Image (cartoon, rainbow, N blue to C red):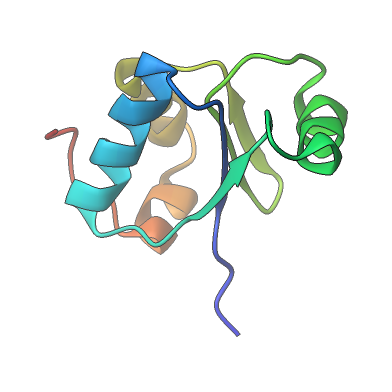
Length: 93
């Protein structure tokens, strides 16, 4: 079974919209978790990241919170196995 990453978002968040566009353009399948409409998802995100800011990305043990695409890519460069598993090839929006 394929491990699908979770992306915790808030409706209207410009960084979340940028992240959604990025993952879509990269062809990365994600499970979108709206933390405003779902308190259980908000609780899970806070448990994972220790904060309430979005977007927050979770893929197994790899968690990046409150990120821009540049920050996300920097984290991926430090975790090349995750980058490869996700199939991310660059930072094109």
